Image 1 (cartoon, rainbow, N blue to C red):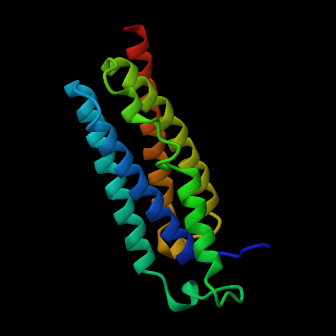
Image 2 (spheres, rainbow, N blue to C red; image 1 turned 45 degrees about the vertical axis):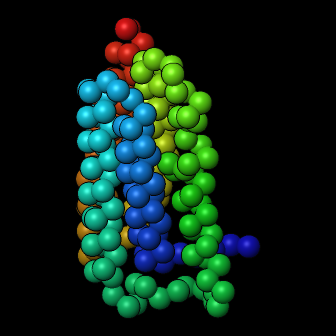
Length: 169
């Protein structure tokens, strides 16, 4: 079965990805004691919150035409598919390192696991957003996607730098 998504569907999925990311970073921040690690993770959560607001704003600006379904879908299967895709690909709880299993371990080990997972999730979100660029109309701020992609890339740099510094010890 193939699905054809409109801009509204895609932006809804982007909002979910960002919500999942913010939740992941907040939960991760609660799992470490090291103040710089906590601040890094809380800062990333705040950035994901801002991205979600950007996508919500873009979605609110859609015209009725841009929200129209491009396929017959009386059961709203495409929406369920998108939600399942977002929940299974980027910042999903079942893929998040079992933080409870890491309890009692040094912050260094916990942060290594968090950072490795976060780097992979940020890469997945960039891939998704690059694909979105073909769907989101120029008039809705396609350029905002470029800004978000650049910021997600900066997250990867921050996370990678932090991972390297932790490994160096």
